[in-house]
Length: 429
Ligand SMILES: NC(=O)c1ccc[n+]([C@@H]2O[C@H](COP(=O)([O-])OP(=O)(O)OC[C@H]3O[C@@H](n4cnc5c(N)ncnc54)[C@H](OP(=O)(O)O)[C@@H]3O)[C@@H](O)[C@H]2O)c1
Image (cartoon, rainbow, N blue to C red; front, side, top):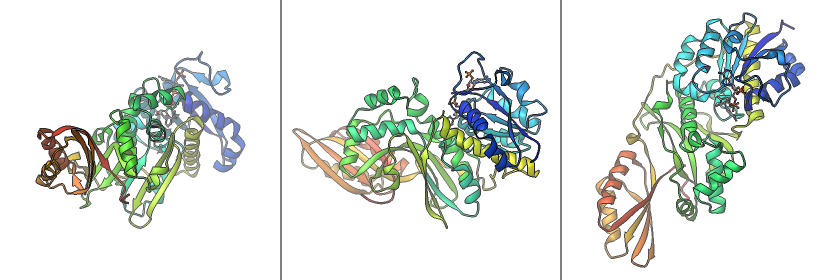
């Protein structure tokens, strides 16, 4: 056995308390796996008096996080505070002292990963930052290091998946499904980060950067949340054999020169593997040149599941320290730029409220054709003087579709563009 590897824990909330519990409960197994005991050196919190979901020696607790991360005996700093500051300052201070870092902080990595990677002298591991317990960063960074990834398509936010799944299975409105998610603890009192897609966008930026060996930040991600998804969108999708999911999509352009990174609700065929991801589960579908299609599925959040990923990283960086080595560092050699959303090519589901009279379909079809958007299917339902036209297009650019929709809005016979939603997943329903 080597001498103990000392771990400083920053944060003891949902995730941190479970990391502290597992470090203590599984101490013998972890020591055997690492080749040295993992010793909790201290736990930094904001409020000493708060009740914790773990039994801790009170002497370990401190509110002076900076002093803890710069202590000479600390080897590994685990940051599970969240947010940008003080997390960034603390990580940088620890890096300056040569500590290995484990973080679950998607917001920080997506906003300013470059600064952290540049300052890093040892290891910076962050498996828990994307999709909680699901191994994803290491498979992309290491297992697929010899392959060429074409696309990463994922459900990376459990709250929105829970809400959309409820809307799909019960016909509930968005508001009712959100209220249920909040009452069950799947959504926070302020659900903005989840339902507006900020959380998924941060994860998409991290995944895209790793998958395509390029630097991608949250600001590069096109983001739309699920607040506009209506019960009638869900019903319409269902009638056509689709389900609506909030997807994070990172893909190479057709010519391979740029990448698209986006988060938005989309219809996927019920036959697609991601369609079966229910409740608050996460799943990520990776398409690589040689490996083909891979799917990673599991719990994307929660104290113990996320702590599992954090512990895996702690073991990895501790092993590296003992071996006098370090894991892979940031790989951004490809330097692919992120193209504007207008250049994204996909299919669309467009629902229109129109006047029910002869020639309407021809006028609508002409507007699509004027903008080079070709129609795959059309469904019409009469409702007295009004009718609903539901069109699904072939692949077209987002810019062409936007121009089409603008044109449709100006037509007298179109009473309203009821909804426009992208269609993903290549299997036709
Ligand atoms: N929760 C999940 O399921 C999940 C899943 C994946 C990733 N993550 C990520 O994990 C990180 C932590 O999330 P969480 O849910 O565990 O958050 P949390 O429950 O709010 O816990 C945050 C902890 O940080 C402490 N803290 C806050 N400001 C501090 C400061 N200035 N100095 C020292 N300690 C401070 C808090 O102390 P007090 O307890 O004294 O207030 C608390 O213990 C975030 O980056 C999050 O995105 C969470």
